[in-house]
Amino acid sequence: MGTLTIRNLDDDVKQELRERAAARGVSMEQEARDLITRDVRNGNRRLLKVSFDDIMSLSRKPDTPVDSRKAQDEVWDYLYEADRPK
Picture (cartoon, one colour):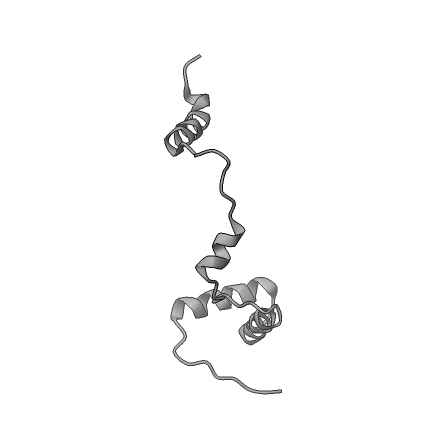
């Protein structure tokens, strides 16, 4: 087993870690160990590089042009339908 020292950890992060650990009934060290292990084993790769062409290949061009103004008005009408006097 290796040892890791973490320096310059923000006080608010340390406090949050302390609270999470207390809520689970474990030490701060165990909570940090569990968080790091879960993140690494789940393969969280937040900085994926995707090209513009990759993104565009996922989209589909509509058959007819979209009237964004009309669509926006319909959304607002739906949202405020309950507020209208009857």
